[in-house]
Length: 311
Image 1 (cartoon, rainbow, N blue to C red):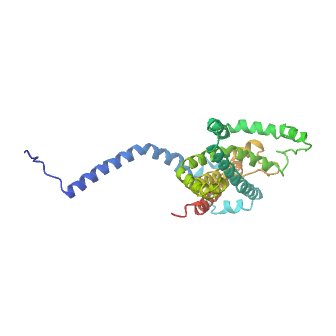
Image 2: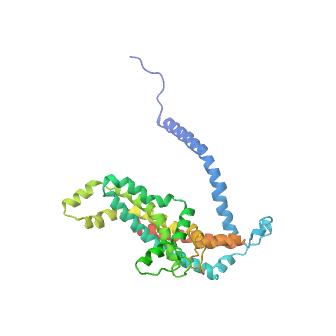
Image 3: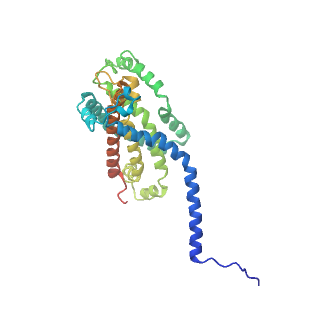
């Protein structure tokens, strides 16, 4: 019987060989990642750091040609922000937008997902696509339609007149303009919540529902005690995504009302945009970082409240 004369590798040699293979794999991974890393550092990380520095300066748009003549002002921009009544109004409007809009959008998305997941299979795909259409619809076209619909003499008031109700000038009345903005925000986002909840519902094993049915659990008890608790990770994802959208909302108030009337619909994103337009780059950068801080705090709070208690 022939025997191989090749010496067997000992444990140290095998470890060196494995380290060599791992090192080559790591090197290949870093090389393939270099294009993305370069783009990320150039167009994401660098602007973030630069804007953070700008937030502590008195830079204006006229200083862009001579940025080294800009002086640091410390926290002066942040102090000025919290003394600005329009900024405080934007925070109040954004808070209303988030506190009211996120729960309503989340609940609508959840209920639609439950209905479609257990509805008639023949029409399920049609309704999924129909409810998701607002998410992918062009925001400019949507805003134009809503401006027409909620005009003082638009279709909404015409329908209200049929039942004897005189509708207000929706986008020109400070007391109701924010409600229209909020309604459009909900309409634009409940499709995203619905799709994510549908994915979560389809990941729940059927055995769980069969066991609940054998124990005599009805639909309501199953929904409350099984479906909703098992969708906790999905709820966390949906809640965080909706909070980020509603906090950063800009296009909706900008296109419908431009923050009016009387700043009743100005949001934090719109205020920051206006500061850039006015040339107050330091103030705009500070305002944007206030927004980042709010998003971070709310995300941490949601992770604490909605994370799985078993982990």
